[in-house]
Image (cartoon, rainbow, N blue to C red; front, side):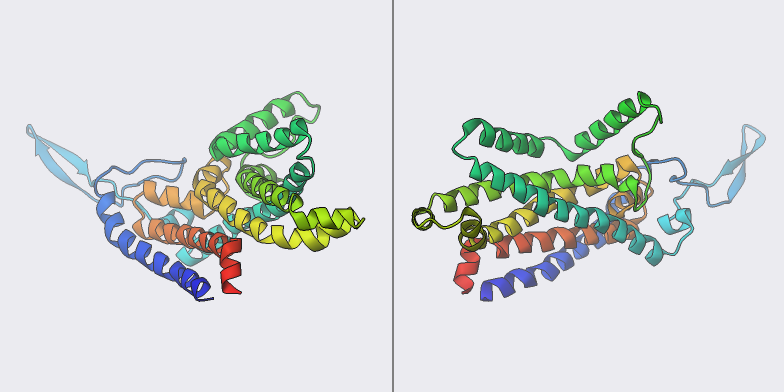
Length: 303
């Protein structure tokens, strides 16, 4: 139990350390590079002013060097409102990814474990999940966009799914798929490995010899041993999803906390970037703690 408490207390410690470092380094680092435009409208604009100087006897107006507006000014929304809304947009993707990982990842892993005697079927499932984990999320996002555009151009309606923009409707489909695939793959792989070990254990062989129903064996004997691994895999997979948030949200124009962090970095909004980075760090540290605490060896020690 002490290990669990220490692991949980590491979350605020890590977040505070990251905030302390970023609050000092980010404003300094932003003086080392020129602002750049991520999207039309998100750019640095002159804040007014200038001076008339005489160049070769001709009076010439020299405008003041352009400075950057903050994200709150560019979006014309209060800072808190803007970033709270962005956090809920990102959480919608992560919660959806968690649900898909638990359902689809567990089903794929269980199928691979139950079909472990059939090399082609089980190997095909594990090979597919391995391929998914090896492909970067931004590549998946671009591939899905291109696929939907090509298929939509050949259909009568001319449109299958939105490939850009925000909305808690069909706009959610493509970003959610891009974010959730790593979590689904991790969950499937770890579930298949652990469930295969349990199914080959002596007590499962004895239960089968007694003629117990397979569904009862899976529910009573197998699931309690697999559940901690599913939670651990979920935490590990979602960490990859959190790391992929900025680029995936940018590709789809989702407007979440990840996209705002990139925008803040581009226009030298130090406070916006630090806040976004701290939010992403909190998510990452929390998922790391969940994955660590859920490992079976930790649970057994705690008992």
